Image (cartoon, rainbow, N blue to C red; front, side, top):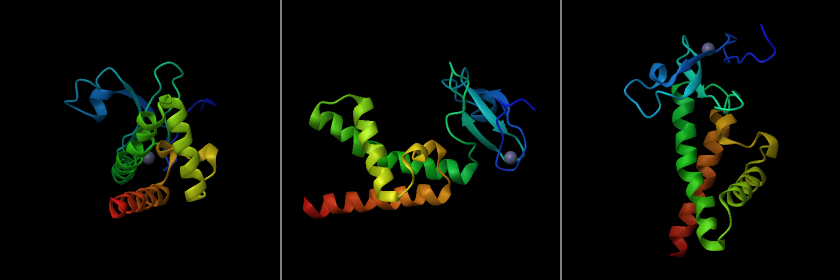
Length: 138
Ligand SMILES: [Zn+2]
């Protein structure tokens, strides 16, 4: 096993596959690469230039939790771009810094693509509480 091998939580080495293997029918993703553990039906996308995985391998439940967390969290930092006229990089950085402070997840590990199910649930609950405060104030 090479030092650059990517492993699934189950301990198996992930295989590099095309998008057609994990998202059949999604022709827009067919050219992309993913690290997949077939027995777990877990995968993560692969960075095109560095070939590093963009997070850890996620099975069905974790993928859904990460999707939900992104759907709630991303609009929060994206608002900052419109409001303050800052770059995507600055706004996303500020968003993740806030997320790290609020959830207690260390900044270096505080990326939704790297989170486990419990961490995703924390993010979802936190963002929902922000939305409910916004609604209550409106
Ligand atoms: Zn596995």
